[in-house]
Length: 343
Image (cartoon, rainbow, N blue to C red):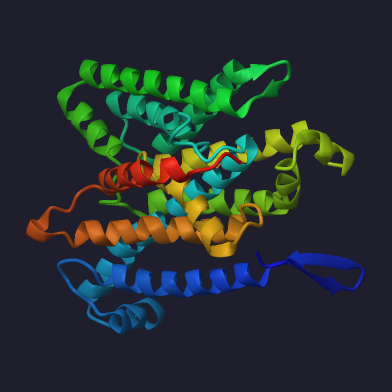
């Protein structure tokens, strides 16, 4: 395992791991290339250089510029931002619970966020901003219920959190189906399509709220990352090192729920990303906690990769990205769960 290094900046010292920075650079470069490929993927095909020229200098025909700026760029940004938000949320919950299954899609928060949006769609709502607000509200309410049921003696045990979350998520999934059955056919079909998790027809109204949410929340969780790593060693030891365990846990869990809810509101419920991306980061960056910045890049790369693959399937299948991630996630769990170790 590579040992962390300390960079001295005047009176301040910064702990850094070279392997993490190498991973960040490689992930960032891969993301740029993949994003350019995604901007060129579709019925109007563009190579990466053409997409870059249109993006930077406004080259190309009016139709090509409209396709890139009004159709593909919002979709690509939504995929990148939703993947980053889900991955960071998963890394936080896995760290707080010290359990590899502690991700928002497993413990019911993603399903809870989806419930609010489903109710909104069935009631006839069409605004993407309002549906995102409903998703955030129901996601926070679900988190309060899960944490309240999992708490014993003023603390939340990791195994109770996962088990209670799975139960609440299953209950909410059944309630979502019941709401769909009671709704009008057109609204129910629209909500059902949204529940499959799709990046089709994403617009700036989907990408901008997610961008604003990440711009506000990501600096907060990055500043709290060092305290989060101390909490992984146990609450008692963290308190001895000056960390207010309950306050830090509450703030980080609140931010993680908001991130997962915003991502769900923008793209529908997406499985697998929040669960697998932090594990891949541990493989890339070594055993140095769960670095949140590489996690964000990895989640963005995973979701955008799956979206590009889903658009390139034979026979013009073009499956919703949520179904693709669920298929990949199922295979991942079958082979990975026997090898997962408790934190």
